[in-house]
Length: 278
Image (cartoon, rainbow, N blue to C red; front, side):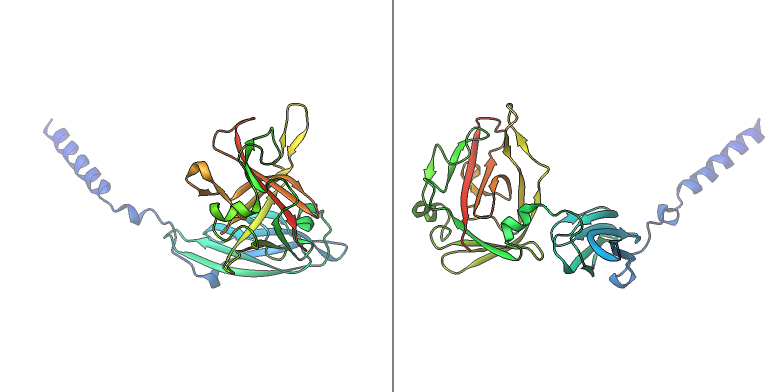
């Protein structure tokens, strides 16, 4: 009996020592690496000997992935993305180490041919290089609200260009926006000469179809860093709007909309009416 008690005491003591071993001795999450140690590639698909506009991104490094390929982003370790312009395209990779530090590296990819179809909206919005847009003064109103999915232009509270500066200083008459294809750059120039810059991207799979089958919105335009002219939601304390439904986009006209939170069909939506100025 005494031997059994002694055995139990020894066993408990050994388990206690094992339980006190430091966790870090057994868990190795790896050390931080620097940008020169990144093992990343951006490889265009080659068809008939030419680099096409589909590029395979691959990160073999022990870091979290964030790719910026100029006309879009990806957080996948491996992804295939579509580029929309020939020539040299820069792809910037930002990795996050296990300790939280970030490292960055830029790769250059040459595209010989736009073998894979590029949505026409890129050409409409940028003119193939860059294009200016202003308020569409041919419309009864250029900004305001109306029924989301029931209207396609300001219908309730409607404002003309002369009223815009009261809502967003220097963003009415004389203000303009420039969309540039290379790097998907966006610039808002106010009437006082000040500018705001950002980036933009499309998702033309995000259509909104009405019950009768009519396509009400043909996709979404997303901005970062800056909004369109008077790009705010008044009933949300003037919160900036960065994501817009595209109701119309062609060579000369652009109509955008934004629903207030929870707005279904007939709820409050906001509308922007623009025209190409070049």
